[in-house]
Image (cartoon, rainbow, N blue to C red):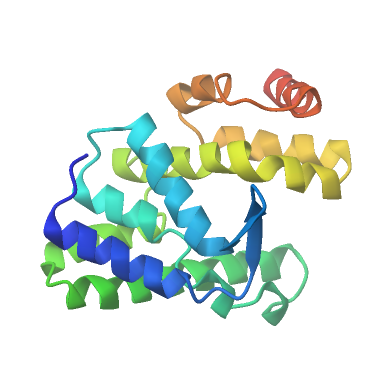
Length: 196
């Protein structure tokens, strides 16, 4: 996945935007803007899972959560309908910011439209690129965020979320989960979700 000059400029611009995230995550005693760290994790996982991914996929992975903090979850009702409205607003927000950045990097409209298509999660299950991006999202969740989520919720809710996550993943991505180092508790919860 060699970086060309335009791609490198886009990554740098995405990262500069995400560096403004006021929420921090501590890794090895060092503080990082949360969405900047997420973007780097998405790129790393895409590189290992699909090393020959096309440029529009690399860009979509890096911009997956760009500016996420700018629309707080609390700005929508705290129920399932509100959650779905918030998620849709976030997707449109990510796509809009990505378009502005990619325009500034002089990408053509055809590629920009491909990136926006992916960020809007269109045609999941039927579009190979959308599925690949969703696989990477799910793998990053399992590797870096599942443990924290599981610590805040009862096991049955975690198993339910894992069930829904697995439904969105390709068989290849589900197989990849076995190679992610997780605690015994998380391993057990994943096994419960797979079994059910």
